[in-house]
Image (cartoon, rainbow, N blue to C red; front, side):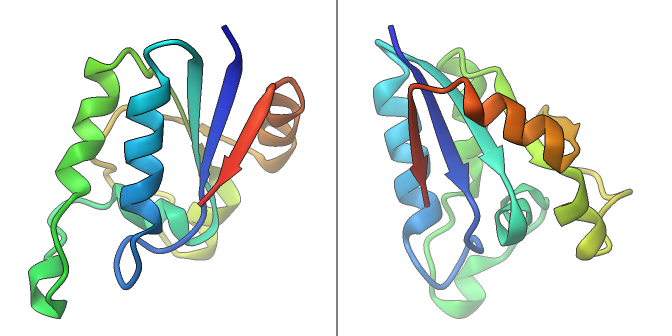
Length: 117
């Protein structure tokens, strides 16, 4: 079993990167230990009440709830990314652990595979 880190750093809408990251996370979790990291604009995936249909995009954000069903419990959010977007006190839509940049870096250093979206 390998340790796989999925880094989501792109915004949730306007491209397919976030949806692809979630698809990969769910697929590889069957035989690997998966950790998901939300950094930079990736933290925007965690905001509730998004309306992607307003820009003619598919609403895949509800898929985030599948992480827990697939036993992906290591979900990390970058504290400085939240603060930079004035979201430090925002309610996020899935269970997570908010970490500083150093802690995230340390966790990433022990991963076998890192995939960035």
